[in-house]
Length: 88
Image 1 (cartoon, helix red, strand yellow):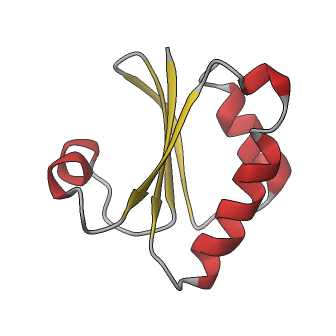
Image 2 (image 1 turned 90 degrees about the horizontal axis):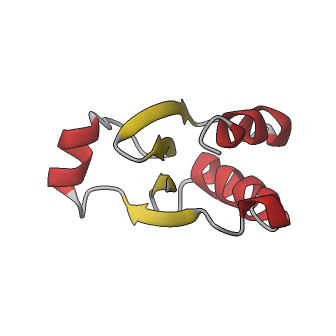
């Protein structure tokens, strides 16, 4: 199973732009079976440490237990879509 984790910080403009781009992308039916989750940065410390997430606006793409890619503060929809496709 593919999982997308978006580490998000409320009120951060870059996170908001990334969130909007991701929401547009995952409406595509090809992502229907993907688990997409928003994680509030700073609240899931064990998960952040396990995945080595050190800053908000981080997107981590997993397929099973394997990390397929990540992006930090990226809001370009085409680049994010390419990254998400690595997890399919």
